[in-house]
Length: 121
Image 1 (cartoon, rainbow, N blue to C red):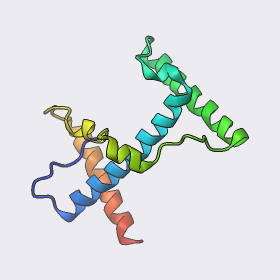
Image 2 (spheres, rainbow, N blue to C red):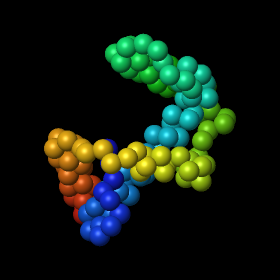
Image 3 (tube, rainbow, N blue to C red):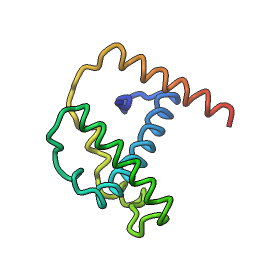
């Protein structure tokens, strides 16, 4: 998912970008925590896409089981660490790929969801 370009953002687009950015921070933190324990994720997993998806799902499941048994990891990432590391900027600099109509429609649907959710809070 891509943020809206920063020029001439309306309130709805700004809200979408903010929510997308916050979600990415959480995902980056979670991936950083999982990567610390499961070193296979530090390099390219050489297998089919389907097998890679199964491996990642199994790692997430095992990670959650360990948290249930042992509690939260001691060396957890914080959102501040991720924000200050510059990792968030990698998403914005991926080039000028043209998104499909489906991708635009998905982004629009999420924007509407976030805006409607914000109205009821």
